[in-house]
Image (cartoon, rainbow, N blue to C red):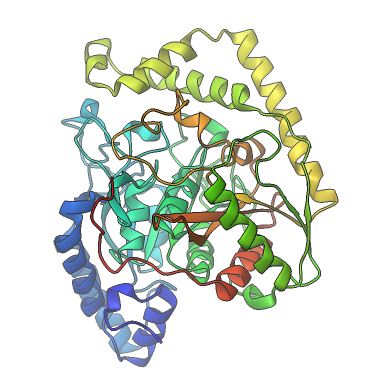
Amino acid sequence: MPLSDPALWSACELLCAFRRRTLSPVEVTQACLARIHRFDPQVGAFAWVDEEGALASARASEERWQRGCPMGPLDGVPATVKDLTLQRGSVTRRGSRTTEGAAPDSEDAPAVARLREAGAVLLGKTTTPEFGWKGVTDNPLGQIARNPWDLSRTAGGSSGGAAVAAALGMGALHQGSDGGGSIRIPAAFTGIVGLKPTFGRVPLWPPSPFGTLAHVGPMTRTVEDAALMLNVLARPDRRDWTALPPQELDYRIGLAGGIRGRTVLASFDLGYAKVDPEVAAVFAQALDVVRDLGARVIERDPGVVDARSIFEGLWFSAAAYLVAQIPAERHHLLDPGLRAIAEEGARIDAFALHRLHLERAAFAARIEALFAEFDLLLTPTVPIAAFAAGHEVPPGGPYRRWTEWTPLTWPFNLGQQPALTVPCGFTREGLPVGLQIVGPKYADALVLRAGYAFASACPQPLPAEPRQSSL
């Protein structure tokens, strides 16, 4: 049964209540705004809140439901947009001081256009690191997305604000983007559901500076809501020349079909990553649940190489291009870490960059070849738990860059496979651990079905309110 606070209801529950007229979109929007006012000063999930616009949209939705004429499949459901994504009438700051004085957006990005057409109530923009460059969410504007399970710790990134908003009931549906784990990392750190769909499944425009590594997808509290949101986000948009052909597909159909009889490859470390023992123990327990669901689980080294040099070469060179578009006299305003990787990327010449693209193709083919034998691949989402906020890497650890502690997410940006994270347990300190479910390209429905089966068999709690620091 839904919780007493409608801000904590799932989108599917809200739509059912709207249809029955037992709940109003205005009531839900007010409840979400109340939680934003109460909690956001502590957690930093929002870069901008459009209270007036949200309430106006909710009142219009309420009138449509009273007439029995909903605008679309998300009519009245509160949603958020990441502050890298164009939203008509908002100023997309991208977490950067270099965007000061920018004009309001004159059009919506495809994901926002689809949410708006479907009747979603847009609450505001969620925080991101500067231009989404790293796997945590803090930026030169002074915004830090803090983990609701422990306010001293990071929420992850780059869709950290969206993850925090989802975890605390500050909206039901949240648009994220993922170039190297930016949906899945914060989803795992905060204990929510995050899907990086197959590349091209959700149209993206303007093109990301990080090119074909970047995906757009849903961040929600339930797998069913992720499927519902994907139905809307995956609708076509002619502005994206890389988008897949449109499908007449409802991702909720067959969601409860289970994974009995499926053959699953399980890897703690993809053969090369260093995984924290507590995370490994939680992952091992998750595999027992998958076995109980009737899947055949095979634990073995998948035989893929560590492709960090490929990913970093592509990521850092893209950062160099991004920074080069900013006037030199404003470079001092940038995050020092972004400047540093841009300097590294600028040293990659054209021949080296072409070689990286060919190496990526070979790596992606090796990942995809695994699915000739297996239906799904399971790993921990992140090999460590959330660490101190305000740092790119865990303080005092062996890591130099965020790419080093995220070795289980960015491989599937290189390969472009669908990858879902669902919460699967907690460390001894009460920090969430994510289970990553990866499928072959275009098997988004199967990945969602597996996530639904696991989440139904092994439900995990969400925080009712932010928890104080343990560090």
